[in-house]
Length: 224
Figure 1: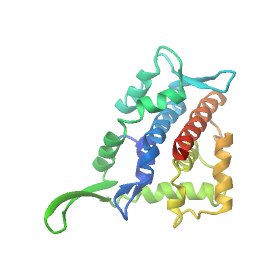
Figure 2: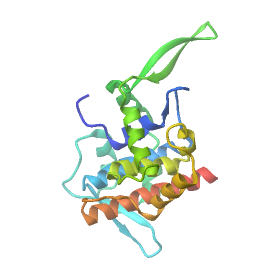
Figure 3: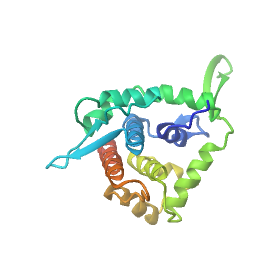
């Protein structure tokens, strides 16, 4: 595939655990994948946000800015025509995302399916690292932000924030130490400290609102 990976693909790749062949954070996965999709639409200026008096953030598609990517387009279509509260959009668009995103990662060679024998008798299919090195690169960028204090790009900040919201950060302790400093840095993301840099103020505001809402909703689901 020649297209640039979406933010949701990058997030799913980081959540993939090569040692076990599983995806970390399955219980909050559709919330955080949906948050990644909406965040990408915000960065591309395809959605805008409004916040009501009670702090409820709603998003709406920007007319004439439909994305070509089918996964992004489906989410854009969902919020076209009128504003939708983020907390209703995430569970609406999130559940179908896992499989097509995983298929893309396999097509890119970031993850591979391999057939093995279970108990020496039954054929089974497992997921293994594809050897592209992209997962390590993404984790290195997140570590530079959370551990070394580097100024993140919006995409790196989003990855870090969604990992934090998914409750999976402790599972990356070998690469990103689970320390009080890292926890404090990650908690800043809940207060809109994204380091969006040169991104326009209106885009940053929408991006912040989407990711912060995604973290809050995923964290709330995790605690239930």
